[in-house]
Length: 132
Image (tube, rainbow, N blue to C red; front, side):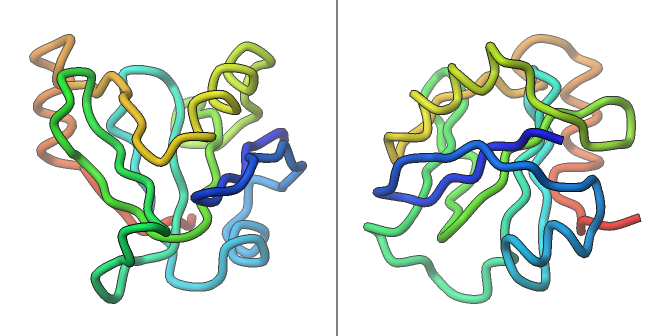
């Protein structure tokens, strides 16, 4: 599947990766987390944060009102979501996120901004470990 690999201060790149924990670990390393409380069907896979990130090596992911939601250090993998599975990003998503991830501050619509249902989902499932 097509995914976007991004790292702060570097140009993002489109890569092919399997929808599999071991494939994600080969790209990012062990101990992965998942952010998936976005209004759009995407997820961000990243290494579990074990210490406070260095400010110049961080993605700040904010909701559309500018409130910080995630501070993620190092490489991230942006994937599409279909049900409980990861899938390829669409060409439009790849184009938009390539532009967006050139910056280290991103403004994304989160689920609880649009619906009450999304709010309950977010509270119950903000982060989860990646894997099946």
